Length: 387
Image (cartoon, rainbow, N blue to C red; front, top):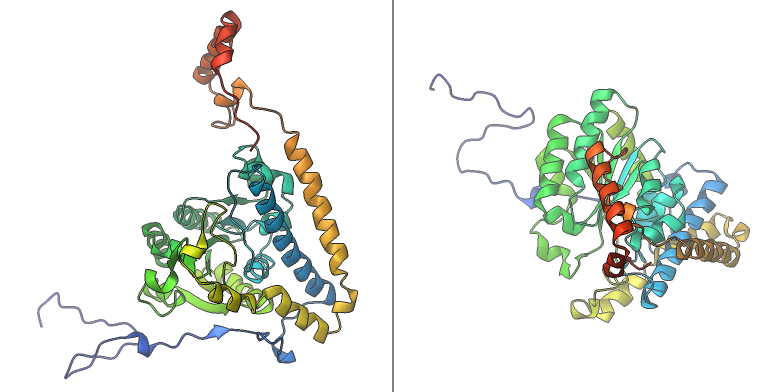
């Protein structure tokens, strides 16, 4: 043995002789955690410890998510939005996970809007955001949350944020929502490796909704599951039935506790995007109606309704009244968003610094003075429309 030859091995690894032994996916069993089955059946001992009001609250938020998606797609079709990404079919995955988070936890989402409503963000600001109006994001930040549109770009930010929280001793976590497509980006590998190496309080919540726009999940990777990828980065993982809101709640609740103790966790939630990737997408070009119909049979709201009925909680749920309430909230939000003032010249210089620095202030005043002296120039300035 040479002087510098390695002599240490992983604690659980044996040294073998003879023929080389390869590690394969067949050596790993990845279960999918479930509480309520597709037919509504469940074991009472497995139900999370929530009270009756919390059980009903989960349903209300799931319904909020569905109604909001339907209304946003509707106004986009009327030309009142540029585009929108519906979350229909992923309500259990989104609400079950977000219900575990605390206001002090940071939340960066890819496809999940209702968790921000759960934190107090008004629907009006979400409509403004999807109209490309920056002011909509101000309330996002006030509630420790943001939306990342470019795939995977937010993941290193969340890892870095969690590192900072760890150094500060914060009793909170940083959570990143991502899709299966994001796991195919370099940013995801960098972020998850960083978090695993440093043991920072980061929770990576992956909604495997089966498609990264048009590419099926099983065509993106040769791995049997996305959850198993976390192990390569020294990170614990769990795979959960994303159509089962109680299973998601339970899995992410336990994951959050691990994360608070400095053990980053990766969660794979197996769900399905029933609508198009965005309103600019045509999913009929890459998936069959039969496939969509099959997933429709696993509607997360229907499954959870069966549970509520079995528990004797459904009789206290007025479904139609809840829908009417959400519709009214959306109507008021849309009216307020429609009244939002057109952009002014100052906005060219705003939203970069908390306080405008002297040089930028000088440029602003010079520009305003120019327009005062040459008002005909205003005829060549196009105000961005509201939508």
